Length: 214
Length: 171
Image 1 (cartoon, each protein chain N blue to C red):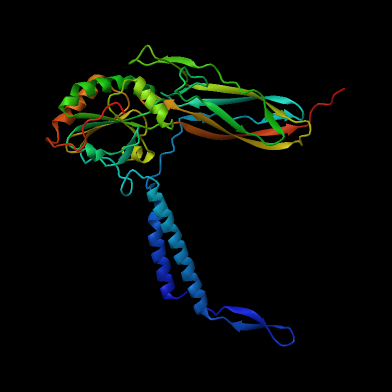
Image 2 (cartoon, rainbow over the protein chains, first blue to last red):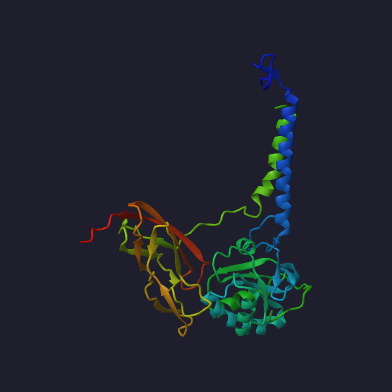
C-alpha cells in the first residue's frame, strides 16, 4: 500500500508532500475496531439485562423433547420458572383477552384443574396480551381462573410456536413435551391429553406447590 | 493495513455477531391475512372532493373484527391515512359487521368482516393546492381469526395515488 501523503508547505507558499507514517493509520483502524466491538458488547449486555425469559438464545420446542425452560412473571409480580413445576403434569396454555376461542376453553381448563389438580396437574396460562396486568387480572378473575397466569413475552410464544391462540402444550412430569395443539379443541380432547401427561414422566416432587387464581 | 490489524478486525466481527443477532435468530413469518384490491387513481379537483373506495379482501376461512365489535376486549379494525398537506379525507365509513357465532358457543355473537369489505370516504384538496400527483400512505390495523384460532393483531400498510386537477371554473 502506498504511503499516505499529506500536504505541508514549502518556502514560497507552494504545497509540499511529506510522507506520513503508515503505523499511525493502522493504529487508528485498530482503535476504531476495538470501539465498535466494545459498543456491540455493551448493546448485547444491555439486551440480556432487559429481561429475556431465556438464559441464552431463544430455544425451539419439540414434541418428545424437554420443554424449553423460561422465566415469566405472575400477575402479582413473582418470577416463576417452568422447571419449578417439574414433577407435575403441566398444561401450558397461550391465550389473550381478545381471543374468543380462548374464552370458550377457559371454563373447561378451570374444571379440569379442579378435577385433576389433586393428581398432580398444573394448568399455566400465559397471557399474550398488550393489555396491562390489571386488565388481565380482572379478566382472569371474571372467568373464575383457578390456575397460574403468567404475563407472556413474544420470545416464549416464539419458542413454543404459538403463532395463534389458543396454543396448548402438554408437558409430562419429567418436563417432556407430550403434545402441542394449535387452536380450540373439545373438552374431551383436552382431557385426553391431560391424562396422557399425568401418566408420563414418572413421579417426582415439584419445587413449587400448585398455585391458583393468579 | 497490517496483518495484525486484519486479524483484529476479523475477531471483532466474530465477537459482534451474537450482539447483532440478539434474540431474533428466526425471522417471524410475514403472513398477511387481509389484502387491498388495486385502487384506481383518485382525481380530486382543486378546492373540491372525490369519492374514495378502499376494497379489502379477507383471506379465505378467516374473519376480522368489524370496526365496532360487540365486546370492548376485541380489537377493532381501524384505518389510518397519512395525508400530504394539501389533501384531506372526509369522514371515513366502515360497513356494518356480519354476525358470526361459533359452533362451540352458539350464544357468543361476534361482529366481523369476512370475504370483501369496502371502506369509503371523501378525498378533498384545498383551494390553494397545486395540481399534480400525490401518493397517500395508509395502514389498516386488524385482528384475524378462523373458527378455532386467533392471530395477533396485524398492520396492513398500503398506498394509493391521488391526482389533483384544476377545478371547473365558476360562472
